[in-house]
Image (cartoon, rainbow, N blue to C red; front, top):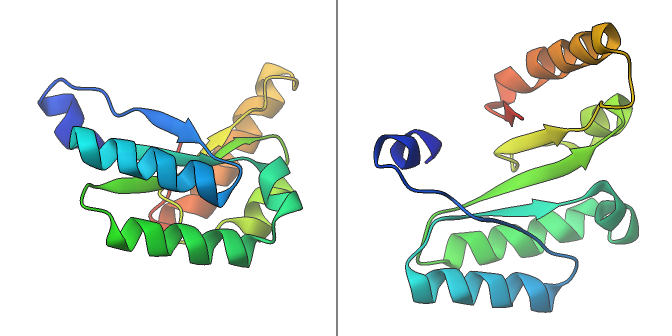
Length: 124
């Protein structure tokens, strides 16, 4: 999806959601606009709503959608969280290692890239 957007020079909007109502509203708007979108879920939301429920609901919505949708694990600060929570249901993970010194930031990022690649998950 990202390569298609880049080649055809359009943006893919991303939206965080914290509950079912937001998820449905975002998806309905995307379908109305015939727009590809990225749904983003944060670690805080995952900690409040069990990941298995988040994925069950999100995958149901994505599978029924009339537009392409992908799912991102958004603004992760913790390598352990990523490695224990991320599944192939996610298309991407956005790291936020900005609080670490640059050398440690790079090493942590490389670690997640190597971990995520076999699952087909892009790292941002």
